[in-house]
Length: 220
Image (cartoon, rainbow, N blue to C red; front, side, top):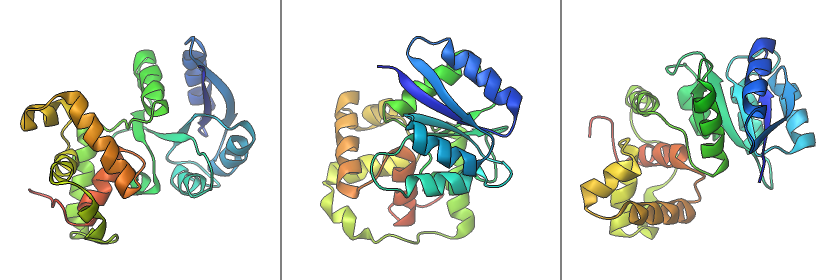
């Protein structure tokens, strides 16, 4: 199945370069482009892509606001991969809260770019250790949990709660499997159930949730 992509970026060279690299892949097709968030929303509504490459900083409507509006809609929505010039962008925390599935540096190689599109299209999150540290740092700066109730945690088993806490500390599935002395597939199964029970989209949302409800705290 071909992964359909829309690129939303105000820099023509970025759109062209990424388009050439992605269209060279046998399983990826760039079906549209847009120069700002407002045009991006219209293009996405018309073309219904699987993945959107969304620049963070753009005129008219930035990528954060566009992502928030896009993912607040009903029905199926595409996965959003935020484009940034460096991985400690000021928008990281809010973009993840808005529902972005990950971040990609604009100087990514062809392999990194295509792999990133495949990862988020498959429903996984692209969240590097540096982004996770940034997210944790933001929770520390903002002063602890807020937002959703802890009551939903009661729906999780003890092991699922344990897995969620380890995910929030930035561990990969493989690292969690080693920590708990279980198979990696078992961790994936637990995490899938966590997302379903808590009504979360992906790993970034799970990390945000775990800190919001105080399951883990910066420095744990």
